[in-house]
Image (tube, rainbow, N blue to C red; front, top):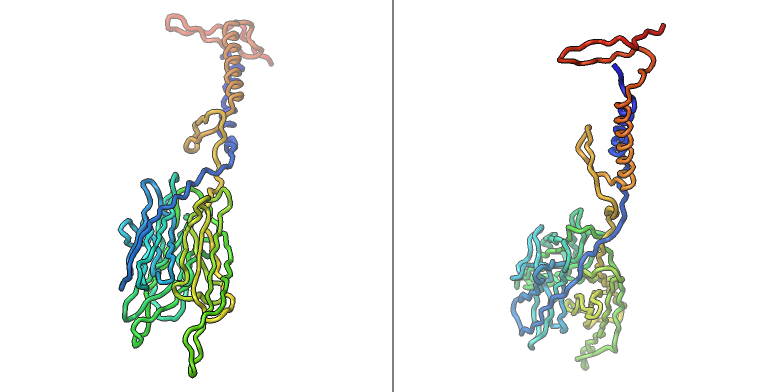
Length: 403
C-alpha cells in the first residue's frame, strides 16, 4: 500500500510540539505587593462624672471598615482604665475567634469632678482583610504576673488589649504593660489592687490580640524608649514628730512612627526600668498622630516615691503587604489537554503559535500536492487498491521483488 511520509512526519512534529508545550516550565511570574489598605481613626469624645463602678465607652468602625486595634486618652490621673479591648458596637467583649467591630474602654472616675475621656478605634478601610480575636483568661492571686495570647498561624497580629474584672471584696488588677511580643503574641504585665483588706486579693484578667487574616501581609514593631522626666520633689505634712512626705513628679510623652509605606494598626507600652508612678499613670495609649496618622502615642504622668530612673518602651505595630507572585501581562493563557492528569494553563508565546500554524499550513499544502502526483512508485513492493463498482482488483504493474 502506497503511503506518504510527509503527512506522517507533520503529524509527528505536531504531536512533539504539543507534548513539549504541555511539559513546559511554569509561566514566568513577577512579584508585587498589593496595597493593604488605609488606617481610619474613629474616636469617641465624652465626659463622665465620679463613678462607683467602671463605665463602658465604645468607638465603632464605620461601614466597610475592619477593626485593627484601639486605645484611650484619659487626660487625668483620676481616670483609672480597667479595660481596653476589642468588642461589638454595644461594648460586649468578643469571644475568641469572633469578629470585632469596635473598641471599648472600661474606666473609673476616681476624682470628684467631671473628667474627659477619648476612645479611639483604629480601623482598616479598602482591604479584604478579616480580623478575628484571640483571647486568654486567667484568675490569679499573685501580686504581679504576666499573661500572653498568640495569634494563630496564617494571621498577622495588628493590636491587642486587656480587660480586668473588679469586685469590692477581691479587688482587681491594673495593667502596667500591654504590648506586642515576638511575632505573634500580645503580653500583659499585671499588678493586683486589693479590695477588702481582710480578703486576699484575686483578679480575673483577659489578654486580647486582634489577628488579621485574608491578604498576605507581614507586621513589624517600631520601639521607642521613653525616659520619664523628673521635677523637684513636692513635700507635704511633717512636723515636730513626723517627717514630711515627699514625692517626685514624673512625666513624659513620646510617639513611635511607622516608616513610609507601612500601615499603622496598633501599639502598646511596656515598663523596662523602675516602676510606674502610680496605677493610673498611663494617661494616653492610642494612635493620636493627627497629621500622618502613622504614630502610636503614649503619655505617662504621676508621682513617684524617688527620682530613680523610669523607662517605658512604646511600640507601634506596622503592617505592610508582603510580596506575592502574579502573572506577567502578555500573551493569553492557553490550556492544553494532559492525558496523564487534569489540564493546566500554559502561557504560550504569540510567536510560537504563529510558527506552529505556518508549519501546519505548509505541511498540508505539500501533502495535497503529493496526492495529485501519481508518479512512479518507490522502489520495493508497491500494492495499489483500486475500487470499482464495489469490487476490488489488484494491479500488478510495477510489482517487483528485489532479491
